[in-house]
Length: 318
Image (cartoon, rainbow, N blue to C red; front, side, top):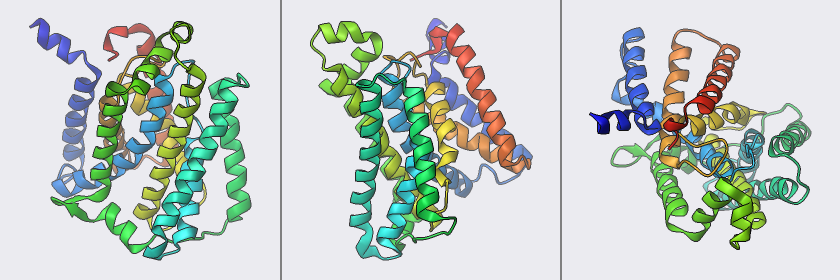
């Protein structure tokens, strides 16, 4: 009995149970909600969020109240860069991927340098970067859509690729395996947990905390850029501020998955489950005709509840 109760207190278990409960609720509200085809569509959307949340997860694990609010802007900018570089042509996919990853890494590097060497709080630094990116998007786009996804990219994201699953789901599984290996099987991963738990002690033990922290923000930018490319393939074209919808949910997914906001504790498996849970919840809210503003209010309230839970329920953290 003790083992069962301990299992039920694990964030991953709670998330999985909530996913099942939400699917049952959705099916009751709208028959067919939990059909295999609909679940597959939900997983595609969850993969987009989950890839963004991978970088968010790393930044939060690194401690020092690390949160990257610029991920939405990087997703939007990357989608625009990718759309214009490939412009509907398969021959431009490689260049688009390289350009987007370089773009995400650059803005992540600027975030990391500002937080680490200028000692700007992550919340302030990344919020300021979000403002810069939003202004840059206005200058680049001027309110006019531009750029198109290559057919192969759209097919990879939305059509069966292997064993009946779209390529983006396999990509997300690959990200999950990469994160598990990075966090638990590499020196870099151990250093992330070390600086997140106690940065001063980690520095005294010889951990290059500054370099590790900068790298976390770079990786956050790269994951956001990858999500931007995939989002372009999902939607077919890019439009202004398309990535803003991922900023708040990416944080909620990480926190709900059991990663401590104080850093040093958590993992990506729970974040993946949290991403699925949020997408299912969003789909239910759409089913009952709650508009975007209402959904954002609910997501904000969810984050506040999680913050309260985080402060009072340490046993729930992985």
